[in-house]
Length: 247
Image 1 (tube, rainbow, N blue to C red):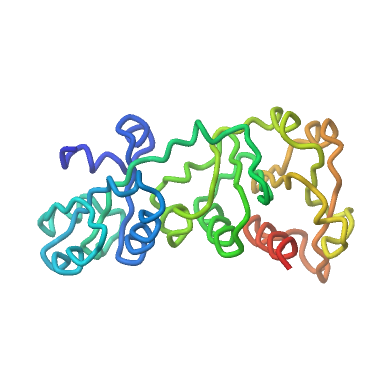
Image 2 (tube, rainbow, N blue to C red):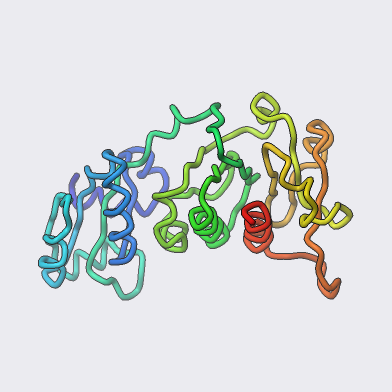
């Protein structure tokens, strides 16, 4: 891929057009390298480095295709104000073939039209920490390959199975029992909270559409708090629920 095309991968339409996304920084590239040992498609990554990173990058085994660029070129590839000097051009995963199947032993977390890149990155990080979770993202959600999501996931994006553009109305074809959060629901630290196929979380401002909750006959649960504030940050709420499902 030409360097001018690699620069365009900061934008979603070009990621879709070329089939690649960008990963930046030493920590994320090390996580990518770890994941590539079990995911062969990731081994097709091209690593753009400055001279300062040549020796470091050459020690990676299996190695990625290495391209040395100037610091000026690196600043054009980078999404940060102070580039470390290492950017990976990573093939987008083939997510189409992974849809509409439930994997044994996985719990499913569904996010409806989530918008904040930091929230999605944090949720990915939590799901990767606990393991055995599959993430389902609706259409009109933030792109998980957005540089801000990738960066805030701290490499978790390589380790969490997820699906894109999963329609809310199609969930009934795959799952029988749904749970969601509501201030009037039962406490999540009850035994029945663990007895669901799919856990629904909505947009940061609007939540999950009420008509869908009624159609699914979804059960409401709540995270008990002090009552001093009205709501939790979405990522915090998901993280607490995932912890409760993992203990």
